[in-house]
Length: 198
Image 1 (cartoon, helix red, strand yellow):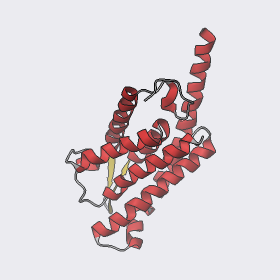
Image 2 (tube, rainbow, N blue to C red):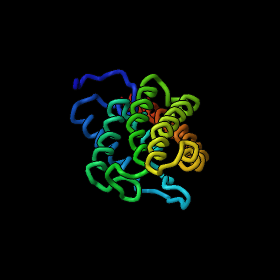
Image 3 (tube, one colour):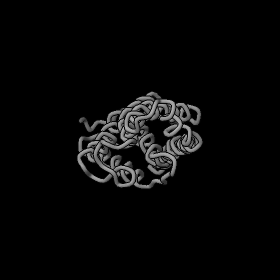
């Protein structure tokens, strides 16, 4: 990739883009998703745990951009599918009820990154929209897989895989709506300071 300075679409574009830097960012995104996925709280009435990974996937997608965020999530999926214990509870493979949500990570990171590239994520309201769209994508990908895995209908899958998490996901959306615009403001302050010291 070119090392010339491109217009800043994402937080990660503070420095000129190079292939080595993009690779490091993708690997860092995968590491963040992996660590957050291992921080889970099991619920006794559903196989879907409370996890920080959804927040992290949205942040990675918005901060790195559509392609790098998608590649971070895809690498995470491929590592787990190949047998690395990187999924919640240290799971791996594909034959478990929540794998559909992990497929959703890849789609959500790509879409969230695309929205961020169009300016979403710099203000609270646009970040609310960005994170809400990402959350819906996870539900759309995760619930049908959950239904097939458990042998239940979609209504029951929604009760197991959506309803218990609405409040928690709303909190994550609000948290991201503080973190992303705050990061953009901090970056602007640092750059203003840097220009002022020249």
